[in-house]
Image (cartoon, rainbow, N blue to C red; front, side, top):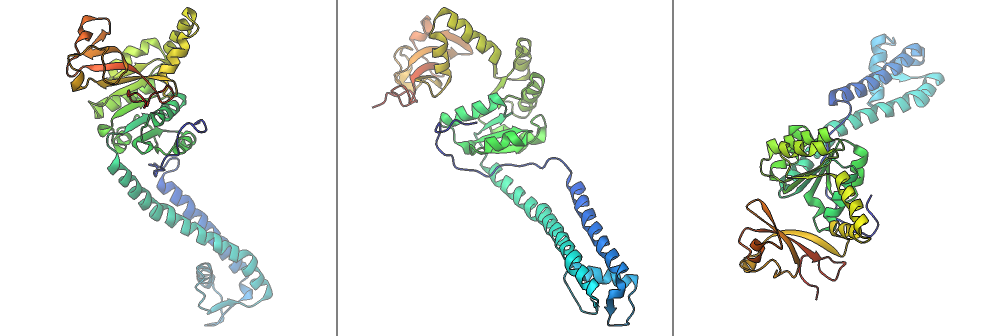
Length: 356
């Protein structure tokens, strides 16, 4: 759940949806069966009370006449050739048949809406959302980690309309919808689901399925469909970290290990764990930023950044280089820089520039 007042109200976007539970034809069959059952009840009422009916054509009420009268009565057509004449027949028509008539009409109207109007509307709505899905963030799994990551992304300035959450739980997705993100109730291990959220054009994919085996399977599926999209995955067992990387994960996060690091840090100083948590959250006074070195910074030292941040390390040709190493004294084009900058809560504007 989002904490009150942590982020501004987001513009709501219509959610992606997939039907779950009964198949369409099973649902239609149940509805039609209920309607036919109600009609048969009315037929039986009219048949057993046929003495209270009059046929103005031939004066004889046959079973076919009863079926005919039931259908025109249910549909409120009322030609007048057959009509109830006894008080008992009129009483049954008013008290029993009329409510059944409304129920049958509601069933047919509801079926028409659900399987024709609503279905067409949902397909059109989903197509409109899909047209805009590009350079977006896909969150596969909306448990504790997934929900926290979505809130943090919005805190960091990501537009809620640029986030798609996929989870099999309708209850969890209702919470996600409150943040204004797009949601899809589905199994993220299936190719067609990932294609529906335009996984190949995503900016990032965050995987937190709750089980390591499911998360790794999702990573495999995503990497098959999107060879170049960065994938971050949460795993909880140390021996699954290598498997996750082999499956194609760009970043593997072990919350158990991170908790251990915080605990170990607190043993060496009362404020180390507090500072690490400060770095990890946008709500802290400082935050970590990863970016490509600006052209104006090339040739300068990592200690002389134009952003005013404190450079920690660079990544050059896949190698991590610390600020104390010689290579950091001369930044080169294409270097990826990790720096600490003040956040909005720390006398900065959160993007590496000093607040005025």
